[in-house]
Image (cartoon, rainbow, N blue to C red):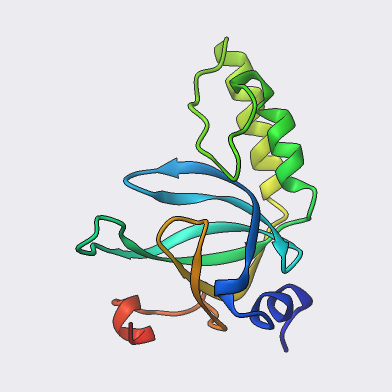
Length: 155
């Protein structure tokens, strides 16, 4: 049975999703892990990279598994990371340059505590930049034993 989070995302064509804010925690030639808040559909999620594939135009195809998070999570994380400056919109890739190591440790602990409540969802998305979404599938990625995600999804 699908949860409300999954139903909300799957009910709207991913190309019509509207990003409010993305905060990227891990970046390597593109987002690998982070959180996202959407205005349409109204939802927030944690994303983690499942697979990536190079493309001729230099923007890699990326597939992510999603976990639901409370809607206020993005705002909480922005407050926690306030020492790093204001977020850029709609995508923020904060440089982890805190004024003191204990400030960094505290921020990381608080973020980890908030994200501990995330719930893995049976949703996989395809995007190149976490701003425009190409496709969305109802797949329980957390239990899947898949070697080649692109072949499995047939893209």
